[in-house]
Image (cartoon, rainbow, N blue to C red):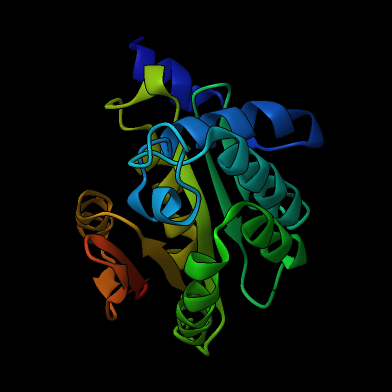
Length: 202
């Protein structure tokens, strides 16, 4: 059995015990993300996000999405945080994290962009992908695609839309291969763009 096959066999629903490992995986996955670097630049390397802020945010995201039953992990290698149709997780802690770590001159204009992002969520019941990523040692093994397909199969079988936001052209291309279509582009700064994307069931 290949390493990828072994990893996929270990895909499971996340539990509270996965909080630290998942925060680590997602922090690594977004360690060069342009939007995160724009919001929380590392003082010594502004082109990269602050690891402290990023980890705090990913830990909060895990806590917010865990209770709704559609967060999945491949032990220590990859994770995906989804919310199911009709559920709006409590993300009130996110605003405090953003405000604590971001420069007000950056954060305040970004608030309108985040509001626009939420307005673009489909009105119909849908699965929402909040975060997905693989650890440094697990990239290029198809684990992200496997985590996507875990929920997209449910979407297809039950007739639900899926929605997410890509933060790089590379991730946008990955999601497009899985049937997502770009709704619009939200520009935070030059070379810092968010791509809301929606997928209709097949």
